[in-house]
Image: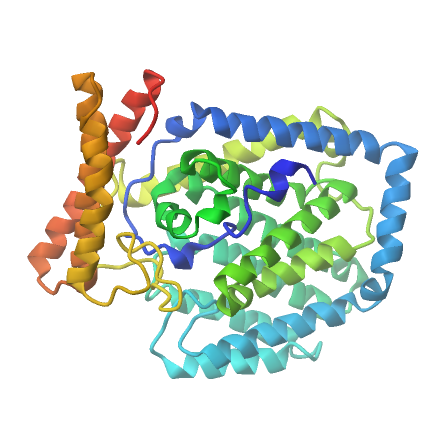
Length: 450
């Protein structure tokens, strides 16, 4: 894969459980992404790579490369269904062992019987007679999770769950015309999940700020506001690549496998468990010898189809993401929950990223407030030292407002007073809108972001 695809997404693909957030917080305006030069830089690099890959693919060299990949993966390809079933079963055993979660380590539940249900699902995947029951159990658990978590931010899990469930149903089918689509079902499930979740890096870049601040090596020295949009582009385009022609999708799968494996070391075994299904499907795609194209084959085979398809994908997914959020929460979003605060995901105690920039040593509100103040003061003093008063005001107020957001998040975490919680949610929504407006002001004048 191109250099773009190898570095921007490393250890940043789908890490929502490291970033607690309020369900109804308004996303950053899509226009902010559309005027971001680094977004278009990433898109341009990916288009060059995809077009170059297609040029190779239609030549004699393309078939040589595909044949070489076939030979390399032949032992796995012969037992690919066994591999997928074993990984699905092992995944459900793992989350049974973790305990107290729905389908993935970041969706917590106090219901002990849910864990035993997932152990039952693990047993059901090994017989073609019972695979449809396992599929029904996967979808049922996702529906059950809706009691505790918001539907908007569970949609990528739905795509993955439907992909895995669909595979189990099709694999169990006695009709060969249906069964031959089982790996295609997996590809679509993972691709949609990746493309949907990648949009978080454009809609809510601040969710990822604490992560890259705590682990700066993830950015390979790039500025935070360069790395995050480039990572989002890499994740979206590689998900898109899984749906394209055989060489493009297999190389995309190889790159994704490298990226997801790179995340295991810095984030540990929980990350491996959380991504196990995605990683297994990625391996299955890389080892799939199929040359079939079932959707828009003429478009995929033309060079012009690459930019057209990618543009269509971006339009559909971005329109759906921002449109659905607006339909559910309104144009300004909402941070008030009916039954108190509802974070979409529960913070992972082993990786306490994202809560007001908290470090793992923080165990009290006082220490969290101290860290938030330390983070605010330096950038704020540096900002107001700018010789231009208008610029000094904006550069000083942005970290000041971020400090207010951090303090509000801390009181949501530690505080008990309902009125304070409501006020904190209002502060978060208002300050984020004002920060967005000030960042746009700086961008219009080609001034550096704080």
